[in-house]
Length: 426
Image 1 (cartoon, helix red, strand yellow):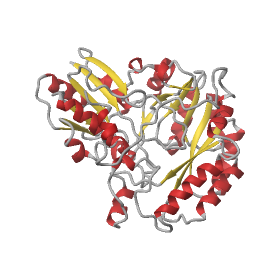
Image 2 (cartoon, rainbow, N blue to C red):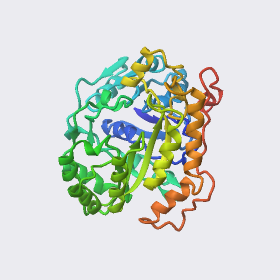
Image 3 (cartoon, rainbow, N blue to C red):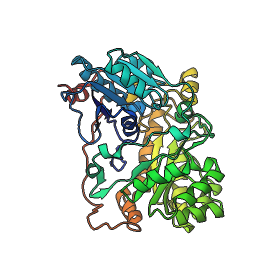
Image 4 (cartoon, one colour):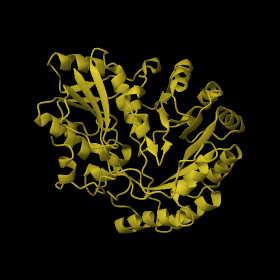
């Protein structure tokens, strides 16, 4: 069979630098596909999907709820031609009923141990409507993505190659109420064997690698083992926040840690000290700021932006709290009658989709827009990233003052899908 894996586009945050990272999930599913089948990957974020292309089976990865409108439009276009469609991914579980209306089969849970059986069934013409993995995948069975199916040259920002993605573990014990990951991957850390991680990391051609693990700092013993194993590979690592103990930071610096994403929800002396320690070890910090928590009032915007400036974070991204489907936060706000709608295309952290507790919806939206403008008033996001990259890369072709490098697909809410549908109709 000819199997096409598709990663749908979604509406990015308007002020955000519009770069595209290679999709990991579809590349893993491609690796799980028996070698007797012909496989390809199409990233809708790079170029619009051509639903007229030949295929015997289409697998669509629904990582984000905001991808759902585009995913369903693509699925419908293929099914009109009689091509069977499968939808899976992180958001497929909470949106299973909606997915079932646009797909011949839905995969719930992790793909290892499920996808090969699905492909066999499809090849024999007996595809079942639901495939579910019971329990979690043992770490030794984590799929290694087929990076050879991704055109690395197309994943670049103004001439600068983007980071490769690497998974070293799954599961997170912190189980934050707004996070979808625990529902899929569990609350217990499942770390891959270090030998397998090192072998995959060594095979990655690029120098900059984003370790996508939900929270490396949830297990300090594992952090130490991982950082020691990655040292000497000649890579520069990006991850979510890591522990800031002296020993771990020394190991991280020796391994080549370059950038961490640090969550910020309020001014905090503890977080400010952590940022200082990261900087002392040559690690740049990107603040991931969420506004709209129940404790946030109209004064939160100025206080947090002032805090970020005083802490000298290197970059910042400002998001509106979003109750992603399937999370405890979604369940609570729905019970409280505070959800405004379930138009999933607007669940992208850039729209107010619930009623805030201590301010109006309009005030929250205005405050987030102000935070973007105020924080980057003296130096743009591209200029800040240029300053960070300059420390580690040869940037003769990187021009931060240039225009956008990719088209931005405008999302239209439910009932006005002309642009989204037209892009995929054969």
